[in-house]
Length: 163
Image (tube, rainbow, N blue to C red):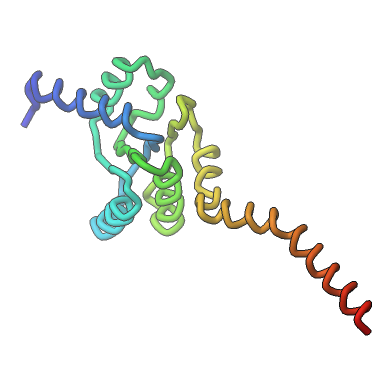
């Protein structure tokens, strides 16, 4: 059943809102994905706080035009779904990268973060960045390492003096 002009307008407005509110988004091709794999993918997206929608290419283009976003025309061909990362900009790329390793039918087309176009390589690179908590732990370890080393050296000097 064809959508009416009002329904299409409402969907475009919804896509515009998702594009504006998301920290990043990834456009994927899902052609050939099984129902079981799609269900698992959607569950992982929900757990990561990512909104995943199968959308019509023409409606996505119209929404992007409203926001002045260009350069995605080539990616919006064939079967298209969009993963909108609403809280963590790396969540969508991480889930897609993880799932595309086992689900060969899932293919990254491109993405966007910080108002920049991301090709497939950049989306995959984002997926490899550790989580914020891991990065903070690594930073803390680097900051504490010299202090810990100094404390150990001073303790050894004090023990030698005591003998």
